[in-house]
Each structure stands twice: as C-alpha cells, then as structure tokens.
Image 1 (spheres, rainbow, N blue to C red):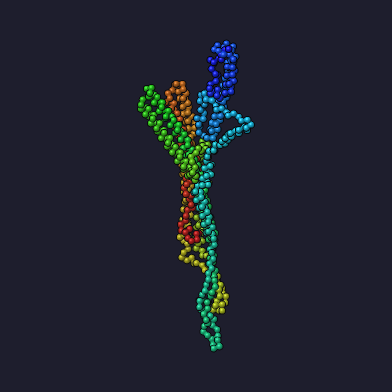
Image 2: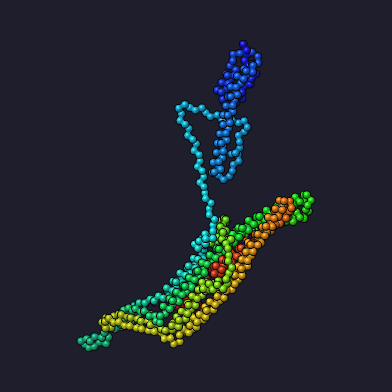
Length: 554
C-alpha cells in the first residue's frame, strides 16, 4: 500500500481552518482520503486530481473573505456618512481601512425557529436648513421705525401740544358758594299791648343762601387760543416728520458705511496676501542672489503694514456695525453679512435748481417754520383782544330772616376796566415773535440752499470718481494685471512685476469703495431732505416767553 502523501501543506491557515472547520474537513477528506500509504511521490495526474478541489475551495474562501471585508468597509462608510450628516466636524478615523489580513468577526449561527432580529434603525438625516436671507436696508429701516426712542419722543411732543390746544379752549369753571350776612341781626319789630317795642330777637342773618358765579369770555379769546395751539401742534407734527427722516437717513448712511467697511476688509485681506507673496518672493530672490537684504526688509515692512491696515479695517467694520444697530435701536444684533446690492446701484447727475425747488416745497423744516409763522399771527390777534374785558355774573338766592325768612334773590355783574393795563407789552412781544418767525423761515430757506450746495458738490465729485473708476481706471488696471500675469506665465516678466500690478489694482478698488461710499452718503442726504443724525433729540416748536407761563395759557 502506498503511504499517505504528507508533503502537501493544507490550503488554509489555522485561523481559517478554525473559522471554516467544516470546509477544511471536506478538503482534507478529499485530498488525503486515499488508502495508499508510503512515501512514493504521486503522479502528475494524481496530483491534479487531488489539488483541484483544494484550489476551488480556496477560491470560494477568498471570495467569502473579500465579501466580508467589503461589507464591513461599506458599513463603516455608512456610519461615517451618517455621522457627518449629524455633526459638522469631520472624523478622519472613521475612514481608516481594516488592518491587513484582518477578517470580519464570524456571525453567530442562526437558531432554528428563532425570529429574525430587527434591523437597527438608521438615524434620520438632518433636515436641510435653507440659508438665512441676508439683512437688507429695508429690514433695518423697519427696526428703526419700531425701536428708535427719538420717534417716541417726537410722538409724545405732538400729543403734548394737542393737549395744550384742547386745554386752551376750555371754558372757565363756574364758582359756587355759601353766603350768610349780618349774623345775629334783630328780627322784625312787632307791636305789643303795652306799645311798640324797639327791636326783635336775634336771627341767623339778614341773608342766608348760596350763589353761583360765572365768567363769560368775550371777543373769541378761547377760539383764538385754541387755534394758536393747534397751529403749534401742526408745527410739532412737522418736527416729528423731521425726526423720522433723520432716523431713516441715519440708518441708510450707516448701512452703507457697514457695506463699505465689509468690502474694505476683503480688500485689505487681499493686500495682506499679496504683500506676503511679495515678501516670500523677495526672500527667494535673495537666496539666488537677485535681490539684496534691504529689498527683503522693505518687503517685510510692507507686509506688516498691510496686516495692521487689515486689523484697522476690521475695527472700523465692527464700529460701523455698532453705530448702525444703535441708530436702529437694536444693539443686540451681532455682525453679519448684509445685502450689498443697493451699494452698487446706478446714480444719475443732479439738476440743482429742480432739486432745490422740490426741497423748498416739500421740506418739513420749511413747513414747520411756516406753521410757527401762522401760530405767531394768531398769537398777535389773540393778544390784541386780551384787553377786552370779560363779564363776570353772580346770582344769589337765600332767605332774609329780618323779614320772617322771606326768600330773596340777587344778581351781580362786573367787568374789569382796561384803564392802566391794556396788554401793551404783550402785544409788542407777540409782534416781535412774529418778526422773528419770518426771519427764521428765511434762515431755514438759505440754510437748505447752502447745505444742498455742499452736498451736491460732494455728490458730483463722487459720481465723477465712481464713473471714472468703472469705465476707465479699474478696467485699465485689470488689463495691466492680466498682461503681466500672461507675461509671467510665458517667462517674459518677473513675479515682483505681477505683484506690483496686482497691488495697484487692489488699491484702486479701495479708492473706488471710498468714492462709492461718499456717493451713497450724499445721495441719502439729498433724497432725505438733508436731514441726518437719527439719535439727536427731536426739535420742539419755538417757545414764546411768559405768554405760555400764565396759569391759563393763551
């Protein structure tokens, strides 16, 4: 008998043999199951017959191992995908591939009749959150209209003047009282049997009763007083409109300042990058002997200056944002990107005469000055009728106990005689106030003309600069940079020359943003009736001295 062929090694490792024990038994049975013994080497046909089952099973085992490893990798990738959906930070360890030669853990054998295990629920994907819309100018205007305190002050001022107008037209209250005259006077004299007596017994008084007194206002004084304060309330309404425009214009101007600061931060960031590139390039040129140490030091200085300018730009951005939120009355808002579409809107040339005519017709400052003129005119009329005396009437009803309690009545009327005080000084004061209000109206008109001339000059200068930047300067600088970049790619220009043209382009962009901001400021002032500073206290109608300090205003 031929001996067993013991020189052929098993086709599986010990670990694989343990894991796939049943398969190994089959392989061994098929491979070494012949009854031959001995040390004779088998023939080629015998070897082929014995090895092909081993090769087939080894291929099956390799396929199973590959499927298991692939499943584990896919499971890990699925867990990583879900984890990245649930948290923003990336975990690189989740993508580590299994160690070489590592095999997936064997599944436990299924128990007959047992229910299938429930699948592990997969976490729901995080809902897609739409990006928050950028805050725009209209949003800040709406916030300011609701939360700026000066608007509430102006509204309270209007209410106060309307209340004063109502109070000035009220009729004076009547006066009621009790009267008892000649208490203890003797009663009526009565004859007796012995003759006529000279006096009766004491009585509560000659007249015991009450009275009602009323002052009747003449010459339409109450009507004139109410009309005067109604015109003052009208002036207060125009002052409230002035304050509303101040708040809106303040919000608009500071909104554009934030946009400019936001863009300047980006520009200074580009400058920092360019100067850093220039410093690195100079250092390389020094290493190859094409530049010297002063050039490198100068490049480093420029790089440091650019970084300082960037920090300053960031500080100005934060300061502009705080000013904007303060004017809007919402200091809790934190810096965020704003919608910058209005910043690049097209501006048109000014027609100074047409704008001035419209300004003088619609300006609330002019309307408030006209209201004060009308108030002073009414005040002069009111003070001229002040000397006309009012009539005071008193009615008395009571009992006369001197005549056995006889009920009696009486009427009393009185008027002051304007002999010495005919209100001369107050009339002259009211006339002086009227002249002052006319002069104030002229001053406001001239002030508007002067302020419009200044703002129009700044607007025209900024408009010309912006148009030149858009049509000439920036396109030329951009073309110079593109040409130098192309030359550098073709090795016809050095890298420092490219950096110079790039730095020039960015600096021109910075000047363009400054000109654009000045244009927007002037545009806001012109469209907003030249009214700025949204946190200044609202103006009140011009006071009129002691005329309004009397107990009953007139």
